[in-house]
Every structure is written in structure tokens, then in C-alpha cells.
Amino acid sequence: MRARTGAAVLLVAAAIALLAATPGPKPRAVLPTAEQRTAQALLRTLTLHDRVAQLILATADAEPVSSTSKEFERYVHWVRDLHVGGLIIGTSVRDGQTRIAQPYATAVLLNRLQKMSRIPLLVGSDFERGASFRVDYTARFPYNMAYGAAGDVEASRYEGQAAAREARALGIQWIFAPDADVNSNPENPIINIRSYGEDPDAVSRHVAAFIDGAHSDPKNPVLVTAKHFPGHGDTNTDSHLDMPRLDQDREHMDAIELKPFEAAIAHGVDAIMTAHMSVPAIEPDDIPATVSPRVLTGLLRGELKFQNLIITDAMDMQGLTKEFNGAEASVRAIMAGADVLLMPPDPERAIQAVETAVLRGRIPRQRIDESALRVLTAKVHLGLTRSKLVNVEAVADVLDAKESAESAQRVSDRAITLVKNDGGVVPLKNANQSCVIVATQSRGSISGTRFAQEFARRAKDARIVTVDSTMPEAALQAMVGDTSRCSEIVISANVAVAAYRGDVALGGDLAPFIEKLSEGPVPVVMVAVGNPYLLASFPKVAAYMATFSVTSPSEFSAAKALFGQMPITGRMPVSIPGFAALGDGIQLPPGTH
Image 1 (cartoon, rainbow, N blue to C red):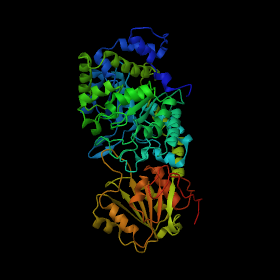
Image 2 (image 1 turned 30 degrees about the vertical axis):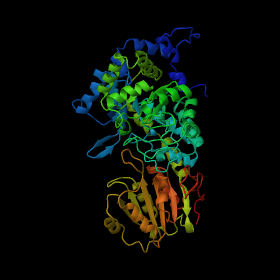
Image 3 (image 1 turned 135 degrees about the vertical axis):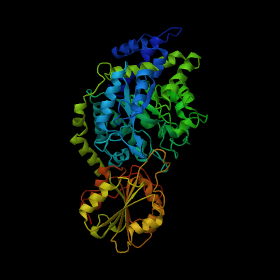
Image 4 (image 1 turned 45 degrees about the horizontal axis):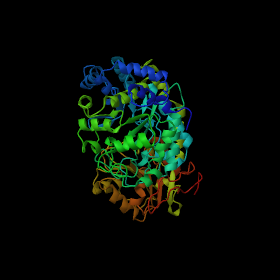
């Protein structure tokens, strides 16, 4: 275990012991740190309501808002009236379109809200790909599985460092990353390329590296979070829609699911996020892990000796809400051992429910004090009690870091993996006669745009069309036209995980249309931009290449690889049953024909 760990930041066991006197002989007292003493002093100034409120992270959409807007009034109510402990910056949906946060709007909004809060706000966000996962105009780091395919642990370390730097520049101190799930189920609809792969040892190395990188800069201290405990990778249900179930015994969990979390704890991870999933090997009752004392207190606190922050996954997800209403779920999560409730559907009701549970004796007062002290200690460690505002003028200098963009592109290049190449069709030999189909999930999607641009720049006479899953087969046929004279048909299949979708497949009539093309006389080259498991649905394609990411740098890498302008060196970080084994990958030097 490292000498400097997040445990040193948040280990408040000694301070908690001072709050709760127990009868009988006591071991020699361990004096609390200066940070813990400051946190204890803050705790003593808080009412029961405010102690409970410190355990709430409410949702904020970082878009420009006026002081008279309903959104801003809601934020003010949470911060000024309810005294919530913090916020999570997420995406917003406007006019049916999902929009990610704008960097300056984020920094300005958080500064405004911090000024209103007597106790500094703890602000988090899902920076699984650095800030680009939630914030626009930032370096486009690829998805985790690309790091697994590239086998580049040092790049994961750099990404953690960059994520911390970007977060603090924006006014965010809590990174809900890295994803520590081992994606061993090809049918997993929500983890997929968010995972580093299916090898628990490799996943553990990348998880540890990201944590070490995020903790490496004392000028930008952040909290780092491993998720989704006790392991969401071997499930086939999106927990946004329903409660997944892990049907594995404890021996399997020890060997697979728990390994990356143990590595995260050993490397001082500051927080662990729970999963809204059933785990019969640990919890025989059919309830989500988020509300299971056996999972959170028994396994995570007791067996794995984790002493830092336990945060729930979003409390508005149906994997939880179908089992318990918002108020009851909040109470049960705290009783189970959670310290922080993330995105309760109604923060005010959640606070009232937990406070009432304390007053009625259902939750011990000490239990609230333990969690509130952990939260306050984290805020003190992060320096928020000294300075809680960010310099908005310096945001661009951090987010526009050239070295971050270069690192993202290097990993994207090294991740490209060639699984199948019948007849040596890759690299393309007559690209100007190629027919290129960019297939996306939704109409108007920008996914695939970079690939189309890069292909057209290299083959000006190639025929390039964009289709989507909303188009019926007749429209697809009309758009693509006659392919009989194409030298090959190149299909860029852009499929990424998304909450509430329920699968990671090509939707509508796209799959049967592409399958027919692959059965024809013209060889089909499929580039899986995102979900690497698509090969199982299209076994007759002549060539199959995977990027493991849907970011713009990954699309650029795919185009370069097709034209032989870079070596292809990636290896499969997952297996595709019947088609590819872990570690497979055809290695090609540049310009190979």
C-alpha cells in the first residue's frame, strides 16, 4: 500500500471514536489530525438537519442561467435553504437533445453557488474520460476500454492527473471515476467500453494508475471514486431501467469483481460508489446493493477495510426506485452504510426522511455524525474551507492543454485492434472505389462525422453516406444505392453505451440491412466505433476493426489505420465468444498491403 493514500485524507475512525463513547476498556487513543479537528469543529456547529443535508449531492445542469430562472431558484433553495452538502454536474436535456456542460458556465455557476453556502459545497462529476465526459471544449480522452486495448497503464495515470487538473479548474473536486467494473458479459448494456476490459488484473492496474495520477498533484487535490461496487460488469440489465442481478458465487466475485476494488483501496481511493444491483452471493434478500448492510457495512467496511466515503449511484435510477421510493431508499442507504446520497429525486424530501428516521430511533444519531464527519473532513482536506472559488479567467489555460490532446490521440491510435482480415483487405487498396456507410444510432448524431471527413480527405472519389437506426430498410437501400461496383463496403458502426437505452446494438433495420450486405459478393469492412462485440452479429464481414471508443480521436485513428498510415498494434481487452479471444489482434506495420 502506498504511503500517501486517500485513507490518510479521509480516515476519520479516530475522530468518530471521540464522538461515540463505548463502555469497557479502550485502546490507546489515536489523536485526530488537524484536518479532522477542523471538521469536528464544523460538525459541532451544525443542527441535525444540516448534518443530514451534508450527505446530499443534488443535480445541477451547468448551462447559463439567469437569476430569475426556475433552475437557478431551485439551486438557490437547495444551497441557501436546505444547506445541501454538494452538487453533481451532469448533462441536461433541452428540446429533446442531450447537452453537456459548458466550461465557463460551469465555473461561473459554481462560484455563484459557493458564495451562498456557509459550509463549502463539495462538487462532483462523472469524469470517466476526464472532463470531456461531462464538459464541452476539453481534451477528448477515449473510453477506458481503449486504454485496455492499448495496454497503456501510464496513459491511464496521465488521464487521472489531467482529470484532476481539469476538475479543479472548473470548481469540481470529486471525480466519479475510474470505472472499476470487469466487463465479462458481452451483453452488458451499460458498462461495455466504460470498463478497461474483462481481465481483472489488467483492470486493477489501470484503476490503480488512474487513482495514482489523480492524486499526484498536490496543487489540485481531488477525491477519486471507484465504481460500481461490488461489480457491475457481469450483468445484462441497465440499472437505469431495472435492477440487474449478479449470478456468481463468492469465490468468483473474489477472483473477478472485487479485485479492482481491492486495488483501488490499496491505492488510497477516496470514495467507492455503490451499484443498484442484486448480489445474492452477499445479500440473500432481493434488494439493491446500495441499500444492503451486508454489502456496504459487512463486505466493504468489514472485510475490505474501506474507511473512506461510500457514495450511492444516482438515487433516481429505476434499479433502485422500482424497489423503494425516494424517501425510503434514502433512509435504507444510510442505514446500510452509505455516507452520501447522490441525486435523490427530491433532496428536500430525502433530508426530511433521514432526519425523521433519526428522531424516531430508526437511524442512530452517531451514524449521521460518522458520515457528516467524513464529508466535512474531505472538504477541509480539499482546501475548500480556505478557498472555495475558482479563477474563471484561468479555465481555458487548463482545458486547452496540448499535451492532453496528444495523449488522447496516442492512446486512440494504439487501441485500434484488427480482429479479422480475410484476403488482406485492410489496409484498403483501392479506397477511391470504396462505398462508405456511416451508421449511427440516432438521426442528427455527430458520431461518425470525423471518420467521414478523414476518409473523404484521403479518397476524394469514395461514395460516403450516413444512415441511422430510425430509417426503414427501403430508405436505407435508397440512401446506400447500388454497391455492386464498390471495391469494398466500409461500414463505420457507431454504437456507444447510453443510459436508458437498454442495449448496445445497432437498432431498427440497420442490423439486418448490414447483415445482407455482408452476405453479398462485395467484401465488407466493419469498423466498430464503440461497442467491440458487434462482430458476433455480423460474422460474415471480411474484416473487423475495433476502436473501443466513440470519440473524435478514435474515429481519426480508424481512418488512418484503414489507409495504412499507422501501425495496428491493439489487442482485444475482452473476448467475443466464438470469434475472438482475450489478447487477440492482427498486428500490421504501416503501409502493409
